[in-house]
Length: 478
Ligand code: SF4
Picture 1 (spheres, rainbow, N blue to C red):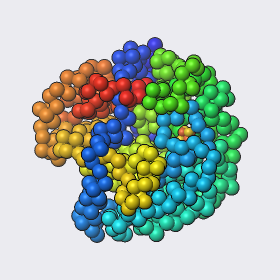
Picture 2: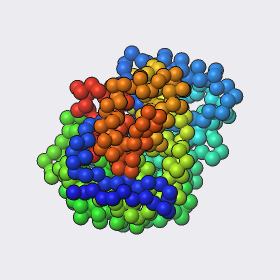
Picture 3: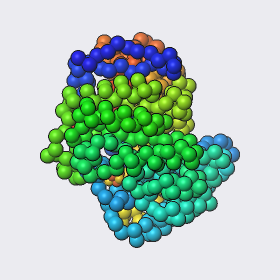
Picture 4: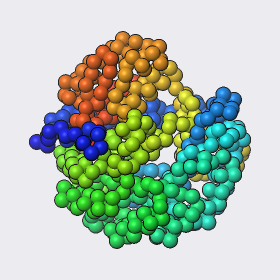
């Protein structure tokens, strides 16, 4: 059995999560969204198009004139030099750097069109800018500098803007990090995955410790305010011993944040993953052992379990946000960004404006053709109704704060929560019986044991996840 007593951290004042028993892991090992949005993005429909996006941008511009309402910008750079076999991202693996010039032209057209409709003012300055991919550092420093300059000229930037970039350690050296810092980037997210050589060879992503350590040292010396490591458990050839060694190395490097994702093997949806099908993948039981090992190791090393698969040092702003009830969730996972509107630029990028979600075309040629024709390249979207908005409030409160005040939510949405969710109540009681939540008529609290399965708890309020035909689309919770 993997069960251990509930522990509380006096150093951080926050509850530590508790490893779950095999019985509970097996019982609740279901598929479900990661709730980086609610409803999850697979609910988007093609009937919602660019006109709807522009209408909401205009509405926002009218309503928010002169009012403080910050913006987030996400810029997707889809290009990668080589293919990682676990990859489920929207990317283009290529050696042709010539593709970049036209792509940057498209990004300029798109941002100009969005700004023309939105008419951003100083009151809606961009407070967060994130470059994701793909591999953002596929772009040269000059290209990144030009792109940043264009964005800065198109949208007002907040003086204390948080500017983050995803780093593939194979593509940068300390000198490149120095130039990124000079360009105004102040946060780094390293794609580490695993330090074990056999695992790295299996997933086709070889980046030894002695390649990463100088980057981490340089990031510290250059004054980047936050460093995140992405890790993955459930990869081929991973064992408790190998993961323990990786975690020892990671903890020694002391990144402020760690995201530990469970590998979702869905080879029918993601073609590169077929290369891993013939390799020894950890069983469900082994995955839960790996997860519990990671939680133990990271918490023993002083990291706070933020929720699900995110950890942070107590001094990190993410841990502060969790303590102060100011944690949010966006398409990058847990975040300190207030629940602001998000403009996604680039192929496949997602925007969130008011009660609408919108996604750009996922095919590069389509994305560029539409911009060449003077149209925003929105391919699909979703406009939330009153029921969606109520459920979004509940799902996000559970995922971020781990607590729901039913009276406050009911008053804000003019519903009696107990009556409205009569059907869901039985499922909540089953979670309470297993010790994953504390529940009464007035409130719900996620217990330390429940944090690992927090998306199972949030899923109770997901109207769409009830459709059993859709369940196979999502990754397993563990
Ligand atoms: S995991 Fe990242 S670097 Fe690797 S192929 Fe996918 S997008 Fe590119």
